[in-house]
Figure 1 (cartoon, one colour):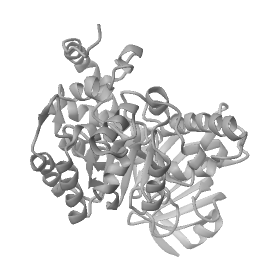
Figure 2: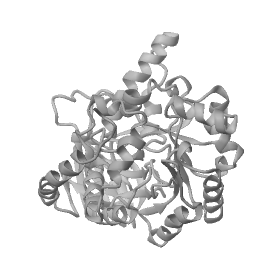
Figure 3: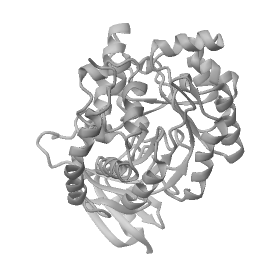
Amino acid sequence: MERVDLVIRAKYVITMSNPSVIEDGAVAIDNGLIRAVGRASDVLSNYRGEEFISRDRHILMPGLVDAHTHTQQVLLRSFINDNRLALPPIWTRLLIPFEELLTDDLAYLSSLVSVAAMAKNGITYFIEAGAPRPRELVKAIDEVGIRGVVTPSTFNVRDGQVIDAEEVLRRVEELLPEVNDRVRVWCSIRQLMMVTEDLLLKAKDLCLSRGLGITYHLGEYQGEVDYSLTRYGVRPLEVMDRLGLTLIRPTVIAHAVYLSNRERTIVRERGLGIAWCPTVDSLVMGPHWLPMFSDMLFGFGSDGGAFTTLDLLHEVKVARAVGKALTVGMTYDKSSFNSITMLRALTGWGGLLIGDNVGVIAEGFKADLITLRLDDARALPIHDPVESVISFLDGHHVTDTLVGGRFIVRDGRLVGINEDYIIERLYAVMPSISEKLNGVKYGIP
């Protein structure tokens, strides 16, 4: 019998492979990787764990991937009311000005709150869309134990002022020594209207020369399309394609609500990823076209704690409702945009979305796993575990979160940090945050 670090047994194992669901299954984990998966009787007869965990009323499945979040905006939570939501555009009138108020301590606290909440919600991997103080995010990742793609907030045009592109991108290069098994560094672009062509070209060269991925906001609102057509003569993603940024792998485009047929063709032909943020996209931009073309490579994003509870299991329920409304309303097709497609998007398409071997429970994949409890009358009975995850379970059902075979949440509690301390710190700083916000004018009467 082979000895391994950990064996977990569960009532259901959703593998995202074949077979897709194993009833009374088990997973053997060694050195941070999945060693074996199968029926519990088979795994237990061949592997003995230094530790054995039985979750006999749980689903065991791959960890979730948040494809687009802003970890240093969570201190805005509940500040963005209907009037502020309508600011045109909200990122230059509210979000970026707020980020400029952050000290290192506040950026660290915001990052810690965000990654801790993600871990408790079963998110094991995330893409930061552009942190104003990225080193504070790296500290939070290391403390909680989650995996994250870290990008600095990247733009060089604002209020008519232009910053040197090399100076802006130097922040990316300075972060590269922070890369480890859990921290990756990519480039990001805040918005096409906030960058020069020189910055785009230099970002492309940096990514291709250093093997970095990239994420950028694009297709967010009509004014962006008008700007692109006026400035470049083509639509936003056509600009990126013309300049060669679509050669970068991985590429994850945030939002992408307003894409033309030509732009969707670029996405498909170049193998680009899309981050759909169901709640925020619906609130701010409009219905997403993805459910009608769900053969695209895409993931779900929370868009940060300023707008959501960082719960992708909630986001997928919004996506299901919005998506079905579109497919039923357009074609009266109730079977399109199915649950297995949404589950693949939740788990990063076997790592294809982010370029890493996660999102599948199979030998050789990283042991980034979660368990979801099935002892809640609001979620029972269970006939199909996949349908239960997509339609009925949420972040509150997450019992355990493992990254590289190590518990970062166990029995619903964070392992590496004291959540009570974080809550006390939040209560302590909120008066000063409120004072800062009230002292800044955002163009609201």
